[in-house]
Image (cartoon, rainbow, N blue to C red; front, side, top):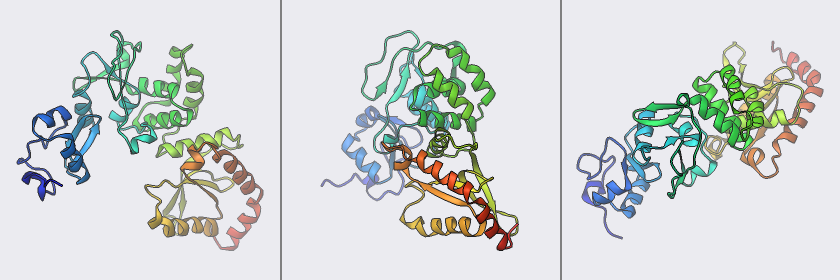
Length: 330
Protein backbone atom coordinates (compact mmCIF):
# COMPACT_ATOMS: atom_id res chain seq x y z
CA UNK A 1 0.00 0.00 0.00
CA UNK A 2 1.45 3.43 -0.93
CA UNK A 3 2.76 5.47 1.96
CA UNK A 4 0.91 8.58 3.06
CA UNK A 5 2.35 11.97 2.04
CA UNK A 6 4.74 13.48 4.55
CA UNK A 7 2.30 16.27 5.49
CA UNK A 8 -0.13 13.75 7.00
CA UNK A 9 2.01 10.67 7.69
CA UNK A 10 2.45 11.22 11.42
CA UNK A 11 -0.05 14.03 11.88
CA UNK A 12 -2.39 14.25 14.84
CA UNK A 13 -4.13 17.23 13.24
CA UNK A 14 -3.66 18.77 9.80
CA UNK A 15 -1.63 21.98 9.81
CA UNK A 16 -0.54 24.62 7.30
CA UNK A 17 1.79 22.14 5.62
CA UNK A 18 -1.27 20.37 4.21
CA UNK A 19 -2.36 21.36 0.69
CA UNK A 20 -5.93 21.57 2.00
CA UNK A 21 -7.66 24.39 3.92
CA UNK A 22 -7.49 23.69 7.65
CA UNK A 23 -9.84 26.44 8.82
CA UNK A 24 -12.87 26.12 6.53
CA UNK A 25 -14.86 23.53 4.59
CA UNK A 26 -13.82 22.63 1.05
CA UNK A 27 -15.26 20.61 -1.81
CA UNK A 28 -14.06 17.32 -3.26
CA UNK A 29 -13.24 19.20 -6.48
CA UNK A 30 -11.06 21.62 -4.53
CA UNK A 31 -9.26 18.71 -2.90
CA UNK A 32 -8.73 17.02 -6.28
CA UNK A 33 -7.19 20.21 -7.63
CA UNK A 34 -4.86 20.33 -4.60
CA UNK A 35 -3.63 16.79 -5.30
CA UNK A 36 -5.72 15.02 -2.65
CA UNK A 37 -7.82 12.46 -4.55
CA UNK A 38 -10.80 10.52 -3.20
CA UNK A 39 -8.68 7.53 -2.16
CA UNK A 40 -6.47 9.72 0.03
CA UNK A 41 -9.48 11.61 1.43
CA UNK A 42 -10.98 8.31 2.56
CA UNK A 43 -7.75 7.49 4.40
CA UNK A 44 -7.69 10.92 6.03
CA UNK A 45 -11.27 10.46 7.19
CA UNK A 46 -10.41 7.01 8.58
CA UNK A 47 -7.43 8.52 10.43
CA UNK A 48 -9.64 11.22 11.95
CA UNK A 49 -7.82 14.04 10.16
CA UNK A 50 -10.80 15.00 7.99
CA UNK A 51 -14.52 14.65 8.45
CA UNK A 52 -17.28 14.90 5.84
CA UNK A 53 -19.78 17.69 6.48
CA UNK A 54 -22.27 17.22 3.66
CA UNK A 55 -22.03 15.15 0.51
CA UNK A 56 -18.95 16.31 -1.40
CA UNK A 57 -17.73 18.70 1.30
CA UNK A 58 -15.04 18.08 3.95
CA UNK A 59 -13.39 19.96 6.80
CA UNK A 60 -10.28 19.42 8.91
CA UNK A 61 -11.29 17.57 12.06
CA UNK A 62 -10.13 20.33 14.41
CA UNK A 63 -12.64 22.83 13.01
CA UNK A 64 -15.54 22.92 15.51
CA UNK A 65 -19.09 22.26 14.38
CA UNK A 66 -21.27 25.37 14.30
CA UNK A 67 -24.17 27.01 12.50
CA UNK A 68 -21.68 29.03 10.44
CA UNK A 69 -19.72 25.94 9.44
CA UNK A 70 -22.84 24.09 8.32
CA UNK A 71 -24.05 27.08 6.33
CA UNK A 72 -20.65 27.48 4.68
CA UNK A 73 -20.54 23.79 3.77
CA UNK A 74 -23.97 23.78 2.13
CA UNK A 75 -23.26 27.08 0.36
CA UNK A 76 -20.33 25.43 -1.44
CA UNK A 77 -22.65 23.04 -3.28
CA UNK A 78 -26.00 24.89 -3.39
CA UNK A 79 -26.77 26.94 -6.52
CA UNK A 80 -27.76 30.56 -5.83
CA UNK A 81 -31.40 30.12 -6.92
CA UNK A 82 -32.29 27.37 -4.41
CA UNK A 83 -33.65 27.44 -0.88
CA UNK A 84 -32.45 24.93 1.71
CA UNK A 85 -35.50 23.18 3.15
CA UNK A 86 -36.68 20.22 5.23
CA UNK A 87 -34.11 17.92 6.85
CA UNK A 88 -31.13 19.96 5.65
CA UNK A 89 -32.63 23.20 6.97
CA UNK A 90 -33.26 21.47 10.31
CA UNK A 91 -29.69 20.11 10.41
CA UNK A 92 -28.23 23.56 9.74
CA UNK A 93 -30.11 24.87 12.77
CA UNK A 94 -29.04 21.98 14.99
CA UNK A 95 -32.33 20.06 14.99
CA UNK A 96 -31.82 16.32 14.50
CA UNK A 97 -34.18 15.33 11.72
CA UNK A 98 -31.79 13.37 9.52
CA UNK A 99 -32.80 9.87 8.44
CA UNK A 100 -31.45 7.04 10.59
CA UNK A 101 -29.46 5.87 7.56
CA UNK A 102 -27.30 9.00 8.00
CA UNK A 103 -25.24 6.98 10.48
CA UNK A 104 -23.96 4.90 7.57
CA UNK A 105 -24.19 7.19 4.53
CA UNK A 106 -24.26 10.91 3.86
CA UNK A 107 -27.89 12.03 3.48
CA UNK A 108 -29.19 13.88 0.46
CA UNK A 109 -29.36 17.66 0.52
CA UNK A 110 -32.87 19.15 0.42
CA UNK A 111 -32.53 22.03 -2.05
CA UNK A 112 -35.76 23.37 -3.53
CA UNK A 113 -36.71 26.25 -5.78
CA UNK A 114 -39.78 28.46 -5.84
CA UNK A 115 -39.57 29.02 -9.61
CA UNK A 116 -36.78 27.26 -11.50
CA UNK A 117 -36.86 23.60 -12.46
CA UNK A 118 -35.75 20.94 -10.02
CA UNK A 119 -32.08 20.08 -9.68
CA UNK A 120 -31.01 16.76 -11.13
CA UNK A 121 -27.87 15.92 -9.20
CA UNK A 122 -26.77 12.85 -7.27
CA UNK A 123 -27.21 13.34 -3.56
CA UNK A 124 -29.76 16.15 -3.90
CA UNK A 125 -33.48 15.97 -3.17
CA UNK A 126 -35.06 18.74 -5.19
CA UNK A 127 -38.31 20.11 -6.52
CA UNK A 128 -40.43 23.22 -6.59
CA UNK A 129 -42.06 24.58 -3.44
CA UNK A 130 -44.17 27.69 -3.01
CA UNK A 131 -42.51 29.83 -0.36
CA UNK A 132 -43.46 33.32 0.74
CA UNK A 133 -40.87 35.96 1.56
CA UNK A 134 -41.50 35.39 5.27
CA UNK A 135 -40.77 31.66 4.88
CA UNK A 136 -37.12 32.23 3.94
CA UNK A 137 -34.23 33.61 5.96
CA UNK A 138 -30.81 34.66 4.71
CA UNK A 139 -28.04 33.12 6.81
CA UNK A 140 -24.59 34.30 5.71
CA UNK A 141 -25.81 34.50 2.13
CA UNK A 142 -27.59 31.11 2.11
CA UNK A 143 -31.38 31.02 1.71
CA UNK A 144 -32.88 28.70 4.33
CA UNK A 145 -36.49 28.16 5.35
CA UNK A 146 -37.24 29.72 8.72
CA UNK A 147 -37.44 27.56 11.82
CA UNK A 148 -41.24 27.89 11.84
CA UNK A 149 -41.67 26.96 8.17
CA UNK A 150 -39.23 24.06 8.49
CA UNK A 151 -41.09 22.72 11.53
CA UNK A 152 -44.37 22.88 9.60
CA UNK A 153 -42.92 21.15 6.53
CA UNK A 154 -41.28 18.34 8.48
CA UNK A 155 -44.38 17.93 10.64
CA UNK A 156 -46.39 17.43 7.45
CA UNK A 157 -44.04 15.40 5.30
CA UNK A 158 -42.07 12.99 7.50
CA UNK A 159 -43.19 9.67 8.91
CA UNK A 160 -45.22 10.54 12.02
CA UNK A 161 -42.60 9.35 14.54
CA UNK A 162 -39.87 11.37 12.85
CA UNK A 163 -42.26 14.29 12.35
CA UNK A 164 -42.98 14.61 16.07
CA UNK A 165 -39.26 14.42 16.80
CA UNK A 166 -38.68 17.33 14.41
CA UNK A 167 -41.46 19.36 16.04
CA UNK A 168 -40.02 18.68 19.50
CA UNK A 169 -36.60 19.75 18.23
CA UNK A 170 -37.88 23.07 16.95
CA UNK A 171 -39.76 23.69 20.19
CA UNK A 172 -36.44 23.17 22.01
CA UNK A 173 -34.90 25.63 19.59
CA UNK A 174 -37.41 28.28 20.64
CA UNK A 175 -40.32 28.01 18.21
CA UNK A 176 -43.50 28.78 20.12
CA UNK A 177 -46.06 25.98 20.21
CA UNK A 178 -48.87 28.54 19.97
CA UNK A 179 -47.21 30.04 16.91
CA UNK A 180 -46.82 26.59 15.37
CA UNK A 181 -50.46 25.69 15.95
CA UNK A 182 -51.58 29.06 14.56
CA UNK A 183 -49.47 28.56 11.42
CA UNK A 184 -51.18 25.30 10.52
CA UNK A 185 -54.23 26.96 8.96
CA UNK A 186 -52.21 28.33 6.06
CA UNK A 187 -51.53 24.72 4.99
CA UNK A 188 -55.19 23.76 4.78
CA UNK A 189 -55.57 21.39 1.84
CA UNK A 190 -51.84 20.64 1.65
CA UNK A 191 -50.42 17.13 1.95
CA UNK A 192 -49.92 16.05 5.56
CA UNK A 193 -51.78 18.92 7.23
CA UNK A 194 -53.96 16.53 9.25
CA UNK A 195 -50.85 14.90 10.69
CA UNK A 196 -49.29 18.30 11.38
CA UNK A 197 -52.39 19.50 13.21
CA UNK A 198 -52.37 16.44 15.47
CA UNK A 199 -48.66 16.37 16.18
CA UNK A 200 -48.27 20.11 16.80
CA UNK A 201 -50.61 19.74 19.76
CA UNK A 202 -48.45 16.91 21.16
CA UNK A 203 -45.11 18.67 20.83
CA UNK A 204 -42.92 18.77 23.93
CA UNK A 205 -39.54 20.51 24.16
CA UNK A 206 -38.58 18.18 27.02
CA UNK A 207 -37.87 15.29 24.66
CA UNK A 208 -34.09 15.17 24.27
CA UNK A 209 -33.76 12.86 21.28
CA UNK A 210 -35.83 11.62 18.32
CA UNK A 211 -36.33 8.15 19.85
CA UNK A 212 -37.72 9.72 23.03
CA UNK A 213 -40.17 11.68 20.89
CA UNK A 214 -41.14 8.51 19.03
CA UNK A 215 -41.60 6.63 22.30
CA UNK A 216 -43.93 9.37 23.52
CA UNK A 217 -46.02 9.12 20.33
CA UNK A 218 -46.33 5.36 20.89
CA UNK A 219 -47.70 6.26 24.33
CA UNK A 220 -50.39 8.48 22.81
CA UNK A 221 -51.26 5.95 20.13
CA UNK A 222 -51.72 3.25 22.79
CA UNK A 223 -54.58 5.35 24.29
CA UNK A 224 -53.03 5.31 27.75
CA UNK A 225 -55.33 7.38 30.00
CA UNK A 226 -52.60 9.78 31.18
CA UNK A 227 -50.57 12.41 29.38
CA UNK A 228 -46.88 11.43 29.37
CA UNK A 229 -44.40 13.72 31.09
CA UNK A 230 -40.82 14.11 29.89
CA UNK A 231 -37.54 14.23 31.84
CA UNK A 232 -39.00 13.33 35.23
CA UNK A 233 -36.51 13.88 38.03
CA UNK A 234 -36.40 11.33 40.84
CA UNK A 235 -34.66 12.57 43.98
CA UNK A 236 -32.22 11.07 46.45
CA UNK A 237 -32.97 10.89 50.19
CA UNK A 238 -31.48 14.34 50.76
CA UNK A 239 -33.75 15.88 48.13
CA UNK A 240 -31.18 16.35 45.39
CA UNK A 241 -32.08 15.23 41.87
CA UNK A 242 -30.55 11.82 41.19
CA UNK A 243 -32.01 10.24 38.05
CA UNK A 244 -34.18 11.39 35.17
CA UNK A 245 -36.79 9.21 33.50
CA UNK A 246 -37.32 9.82 29.77
CA UNK A 247 -41.11 9.46 29.66
CA UNK A 248 -43.64 8.53 32.30
CA UNK A 249 -46.51 9.24 34.64
CA UNK A 250 -45.51 10.17 38.22
CA UNK A 251 -49.05 9.58 39.48
CA UNK A 252 -48.74 5.81 39.10
CA UNK A 253 -44.92 5.82 39.07
CA UNK A 254 -44.64 4.27 35.63
CA UNK A 255 -41.61 5.16 33.54
CA UNK A 256 -40.25 4.31 30.10
CA UNK A 257 -36.61 4.59 29.07
CA UNK A 258 -35.08 4.48 25.61
CA UNK A 259 -31.73 2.71 25.50
CA UNK A 260 -29.92 3.65 22.32
CA UNK A 261 -26.75 1.94 21.15
CA UNK A 262 -24.62 5.08 21.46
CA UNK A 263 -25.12 5.65 25.19
CA UNK A 264 -26.24 2.22 26.39
CA UNK A 265 -23.68 -0.28 25.15
CA UNK A 266 -22.06 -3.19 26.95
CA UNK A 267 -19.96 -0.91 29.17
CA UNK A 268 -23.13 0.78 30.39
CA UNK A 269 -25.10 -2.35 31.26
CA UNK A 270 -24.12 -2.49 34.94
CA UNK A 271 -24.77 1.19 35.77
CA UNK A 272 -28.00 1.11 33.75
CA UNK A 273 -29.24 -1.91 35.67
CA UNK A 274 -28.21 -0.37 39.00
CA UNK A 275 -30.16 2.79 38.15
CA UNK A 276 -33.27 0.86 37.11
CA UNK A 277 -33.08 -1.33 40.19
CA UNK A 278 -32.78 1.72 42.46
CA UNK A 279 -35.84 3.29 40.82
CA UNK A 280 -37.81 0.07 41.28
CA UNK A 281 -36.67 -0.88 44.78
CA UNK A 282 -36.07 2.48 46.43
CA UNK A 283 -38.65 4.67 44.71
CA UNK A 284 -41.32 2.12 43.71
CA UNK A 285 -41.27 3.00 40.02
CA UNK A 286 -42.41 0.40 37.51
CA UNK A 287 -39.90 0.73 34.67
CA UNK A 288 -39.89 -0.47 31.06
CA UNK A 289 -36.89 -0.25 28.72
CA UNK A 290 -37.20 0.14 24.95
CA UNK A 291 -34.73 -0.17 22.09
CA UNK A 292 -34.61 0.85 18.44
CA UNK A 293 -36.41 -2.31 17.38
CA UNK A 294 -39.31 -1.61 19.75
CA UNK A 295 -39.68 1.98 18.64
CA UNK A 296 -38.86 1.85 14.93
CA UNK A 297 -39.10 -1.85 14.02
CA UNK A 298 -41.67 -3.26 11.62
CA UNK A 299 -43.85 -4.50 14.49
CA UNK A 300 -43.87 -1.13 16.31
CA UNK A 301 -44.21 -3.08 19.53
CA UNK A 302 -43.63 -0.18 21.90
CA UNK A 303 -47.29 0.82 22.15
CA UNK A 304 -48.51 -2.56 23.39
CA UNK A 305 -45.73 -2.78 25.96
CA UNK A 306 -46.36 0.75 27.17
CA UNK A 307 -50.06 0.05 27.61
CA UNK A 308 -49.52 -3.22 29.47
CA UNK A 309 -46.83 -1.67 31.64
CA UNK A 310 -48.95 1.36 32.52
CA UNK A 311 -52.06 -0.69 33.35
CA UNK A 312 -50.02 -3.07 35.50
CA UNK A 313 -48.36 -0.14 37.27
CA UNK A 314 -51.72 1.46 37.98
CA UNK A 315 -53.15 -1.81 39.28
CA UNK A 316 -50.18 -2.42 41.60
CA UNK A 317 -49.69 1.17 42.73
CA UNK A 318 -51.22 0.51 46.15
CA UNK A 319 -48.90 -2.41 46.89
CA UNK A 320 -45.83 -0.62 45.60
CA UNK A 321 -46.82 2.50 47.50
CA UNK A 322 -47.06 0.59 50.81
CA UNK A 323 -43.63 -0.96 50.18
CA UNK A 324 -42.26 2.50 49.51
CA UNK A 325 -43.66 3.81 52.82
CA UNK A 326 -42.31 0.75 54.66
CA UNK A 327 -38.86 1.73 53.42
CA UNK A 328 -39.27 5.02 55.27
CA UNK A 329 -39.30 7.16 52.12
CA UNK A 330 -41.42 10.31 51.82
